[in-house]
Length: 120
Image (cartoon, rainbow, N blue to C red; front, top):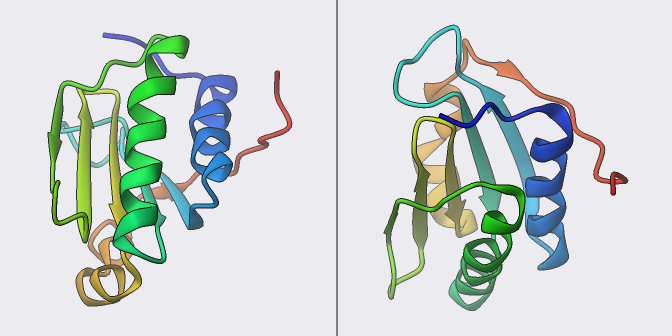
């Protein structure tokens, strides 16, 4: 399993920002879950934007050694889940889905990771 470091996590966030993903939360689940090390939660304002973020991540993640093993939620694109193995799970959601499911509340015991997207 790939060990994601701060630089890699920041790159993942920068990929989301490339497509103007908003309200980005990066959670460290390592101490509370065996499912995944990190959870990235992102808002796309429309289903079109959710699809664009998803497509961009599918293209860019392999460049930093992160594989997308499973993808759910297309073509509806109200909530897309990208499973990157035990390393990372990405949730890309429309605002109404994000508000309704409140994943941050579900993972309230997780540490929030700060990130710097000004990395090369």
